Length: 161
Image: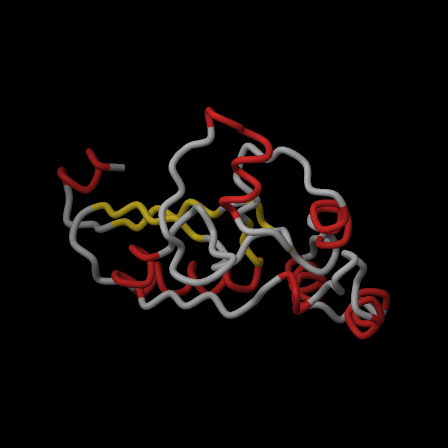
């Protein structure tokens, strides 16, 4: 992409989302992390699919010069515990230094560059979909069962099932 940008007048924003979640996989993906945290190579970072959709729209409309690469992640992590606590537990002495998160329970993956360049502001959390035991809230389960989630509606519009 860098070469294409250098050789033309196009610009580009590459988005790097972390573990993408939606109503149909929150319970299976993040639910187990809430009940019994396991070691995570991604440091429990995730991205809500609807926040990712917002980021895609912002990137498409961006007027950034050249090629920019930004990370997209929820501001919290898939756990009730802090990132520092989990890193120490699962990585011991080899635990990487944990930067001070922007907020308590903050993610190891920073979306600050996306916020600065694109105006990205993630608004969703696993807490919007799951209870403290990692089970779908009843209203979320009902919406999923009725096929009324944004993902399901989008699939029908595009012929994807």
